Length: 163
Length: 163
Image 1 (tube, rainbow over the protein chains, first blue to last red):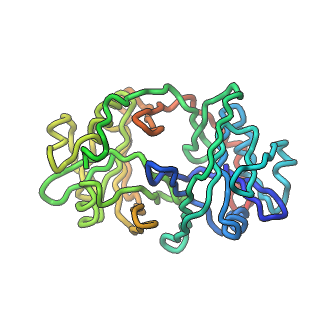
Image 2: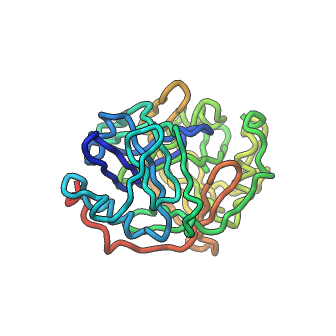
């Protein structure tokens, strides 16, 4: 999810489409004028990426199926905003991870595909919560939960040796 | 993975960083001049995205840890190139899914972050292979396999009703 604050009100949206761009905390995500959060993100250049656990999957989906223009999502879904360190957008206490981000760049691909490049400036991990598995959108309202964790670090060569 | 053909030779690379951009088959991915496949992708404007199963995870990782400038990866890893329908880059028989793609656009974020926008033009699903679980990079040579599949389609409102 993505939390924002326009200075008056906190808001949060659900976002499936994102990817890393570097081995440093730089990532791209698809947020556009069709999202109510777009204005606050554009105005402040700040947000928090909030990774929910598999135990709050329904809430995360429901947050993505209504708009901050109609409701106060924090109240409606009983989620807890916490003060972030380096941005004005709030952390979400119920999440596994919170990544405070600043906007580096925006680009519109084609006529319609808005992409923001974000840089993580502070990261939080809620190690106290029991469910540590995240989940991922497959599309069309279906999801999968993190399965087996596989460590293949011994197969990785140094990046510099490959390219 | 991403397969390409420069007209003389097929090549394949492993790619972790990609995301959807639309409800149609349009997606963004991070491929840049540091990748040997970049030249062929840029020249032909075509590639195939090939989704390996959890049973060939080591091969997929190893394919990402050597360069097509040094080796014929198809020979080295005994993978099978098959003729695609709409692009010259090959399908990979051992994969679960193959998505033939054409480049729509390229953009460089900052000075370093190359992003291609691709459009899927033909899709293949190998329903015969037993292992249908994909896997995903967590970073630093660690991965997770698809876990439980969750269907929350009944919670999805029509997109038009939300925005």
